[in-house]
Length: 117
Image (spheres, rainbow, N blue to C red):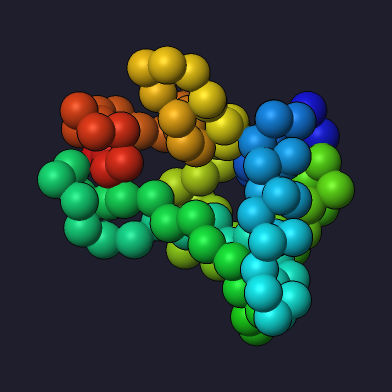
């Protein structure tokens, strides 16, 4: 697992499986305009905040730019404080398929696993 270290702890980690899936999804983009994976925290969801994973054409001004497992990742400064220490994985099992976010900062999460407090 590749990580970018900050003075006190890791901001975000991607597992090799998640990185491979993200690279696959980027390659499937028809216009080739996808340059970075944006990881964000958004208001909403049944527990107060929800995770946002999406592709963007370029970093925005002020974004924290990371290179994780060969994947360019950007995080806005607001989201960074809520994501510090987070690991993103990709599961493909009979019970569960999709990205799984393990956030040590979440004090509670909903049953669907997409929102947290």
